[in-house]
Image 1: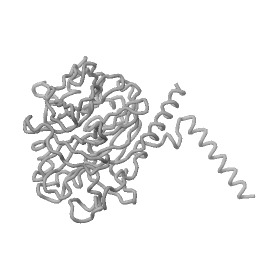
Image 2: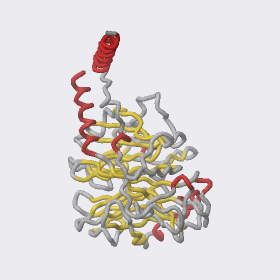
Image 3: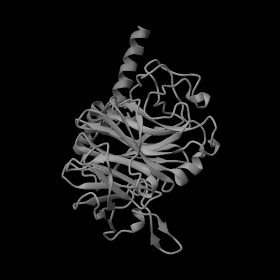
Image 4: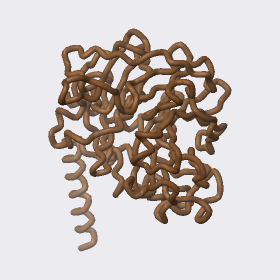
Length: 384
């Protein structure tokens, strides 16, 4: 009898919880965040414990995943975006610097735009050299690639350059300078688009530039500030600043020291993930039009809590810094993310040592993620 009464009480409590949860829109489904949709990585080679660089927290690992110099004879890699060509190959346009330089020196003193290719999205990617060697000796950082609306291939560089676009009819080049990205402040502070020199009140380099091809035929930029910028006149713009930082209406979130935003369109809506680097925490926002009404969707992933780099056999690589996330979308859904990772604190990576950075590819269940997000949006609409 006591067991029966206890069971009745348990069912009643569960019922009360479900009623309250439904009333406040809190369900097990809605509690999921972006990190819950990452999938284990299938090793592309044997996981290596010896004979390669890296702190013990990233061992053993798959040196055939993504892009790296496993023997650390030449380069450290950073940035990037995956672009698929018509022949089915996958191309990463990213940045690299000589491993003889420390990380702190390399990214801003020796960084150059480079191109790598693989017949498998997971890798390994083979370094094919500099993208535009005849322009400032290939200088480039925050490098990404994309297919333009007209089918041509484009590469963008910023941070240590002003924000240039190079184009080619072939994914293998040659890439030629098309021009610099232009910005129309549109009533906003141009510092949302470019670094501002506080002493001279002038504006210089763009930073963290990610360009998205919108389904309506426009081009859209998200830079370091996360302010949406829109061009109806092609990839060079001018891009009109359409709003302030997407997190400005959320004072509970850090309002400074945010960087590395990535943007994509899937499941009928726009998404942005950016990183608050002091806490190693990335935040997720979504919008139906990509311009206004950006809604906070919670923590995308957090270094100390999220174990993104998990193999199918259960082994985890715990990279010290996880930056520059970029979504790869195919057939309307994200299938993979790439990350720039380093095995130690950046100040501890010296030239000619046993530490370095690479680009890692992680599979993602984009179909389930889009289904989840659309359920959330539909529930919000019913409330309103």
